[in-house]
Image 1 (cartoon, one colour):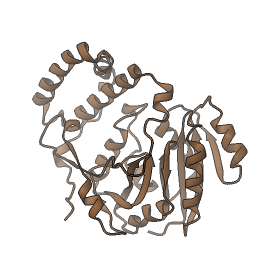
Image 2: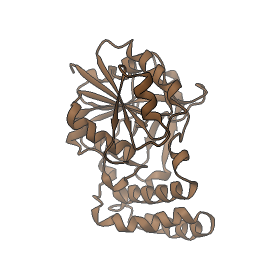
Image 3: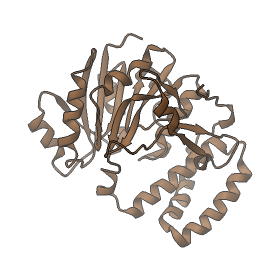
Image 4: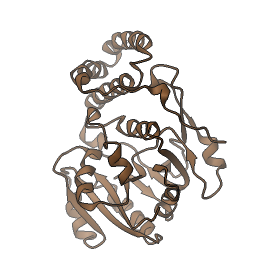
Length: 306
């Protein structure tokens, strides 16, 4: 694939305390690129002065886009309509990257079938691994409870190699725009967040695209930079409960109905005692069921890494 236009979208929501570390790492990685790269910070109605900080300190290097809709990844669609990049990268505002990040992350797109490439995400300490190659067992329910992470494959991978994975973190990834649009973009059922990235990756595999992890493209994630500063634990647990249930129903209701009913019956009872906000999220998911588009998860083929 001939790559001519690449955009890196830094998704920001009150991430001021991270920007002095994150933005220089992006600019350093841009200098290593042999393709055109534009960096855009998408600001989701921040109130901490982060948008003003970028406009003042990086007026030429980083474009600031003030989102019309407050919704993290979902605000990216607003930019894609105007920018029309060949490839776009997504980055959390609390995620630093290494110097060869962009250059290595885009290598897999030489394969026309690759739709999504994810980074090797470590914690802020640059040592602790967080994701790895994700393997899914579609024969067990609920699906969200049967995701395994293989870190050994990432550690042993040769430089330049990329690995098949069920999904990647959208806090540090690259996506082919044409593939993204052909898949219909992010499913609004998960708004404002959680599981929307896993869902898009599985839909990519369903349509015979590839989702890969690039061990040599490293990022360093603080974790919850925006979420924890804006939402309390109650709201976070509410959103997680709603999105995870919708995700499991979307992919397994057709063939694992009984298992899901049993699992969530007992989880619902337990949550009201130990985690009421999560339980409320389970109840709230019912309002979105009419718009849920069910999938046949066991028909999705994800090849293993040899």
